[in-house]
Length: 411
Image 1: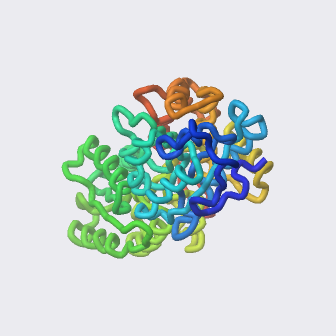
Image 2: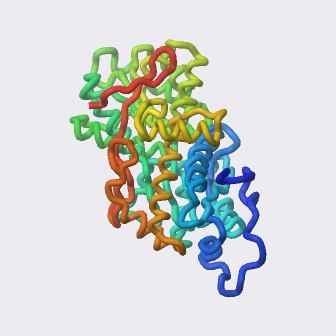
Image 3: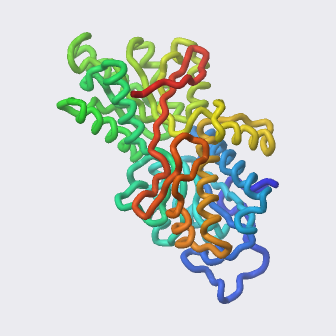
């Protein structure tokens, strides 16, 4: 059974439940009561299905749909089938709020699953919290989704960007023996990039750097990396090779097209500089972009990950590949879709605990009761009223000259 049926790429494509709602089920909190009482349990997914980052949307949708298909073939959740209603915002936070409202008011979604992006998430977070909508497993490691104490209806699966860039910074200093002052950060100029920069800055300060790292920026949905390359060139000329502050490594906090363009230009201008990126780059697509450039652009690039190798032989990876082969036999395992699959599995566990007549608060209680959930990741999944991030593990990978990710020890 397909979880999403013939879901349209734009909000409003799915049909509302047959027949008018009864008077006692009039919309509350933007249609949430109707969503809770519908025959199926629907979750909206706002992702880029067009534009420069459309591959992310396709992969996130694939992974979550696969998990929902598996659950639906086992009777759904407490007898109710699960459904995804995907909508395209093109990774443009100006479009996201209207799309979110349409998904709630017209498509009667119960909450959101695996939305893409930090700035896009930020643009709808006040609406989500006001309407008491579940906001689960966003493809974002931004701190705005990780308040302390956590926002009641916001739950994360992945490690934060700060945790990823901290891990990358420690790796460069402790393992690769690079002085913290010789590390720069190339980041998208928004909440995504700022979160990553903050983690790297914190780690390097803790390791003795007296000044913040060189902060290089690029604009979202562009590949305008020239200014960043020029900044490094100026720094190299001013400091001189072998002197403190001469850039020997760059931590990237960038999506795949901008990251690939930066690698291309950096490899040509500074062939010895070590390059890392965070998981949100879209690892497999990033590797494909670099392979088009040639082996010298691919080899040695480090990417931190928030899930284990989807092509590996862990229990969860084997499970995912078997599910893909059953429901989407033409697709292959990918880091992004694997993350969405795992996120959806965790949500499903919380929905089961919420009972046959869930509302947002029952789902929150169900999720917060998850302790020691062993999915085969290595670390177990744990939530509580004061902890809404499932795992904090960061895995290390490095590209070989064939474009395959190989595991590396970050410590």
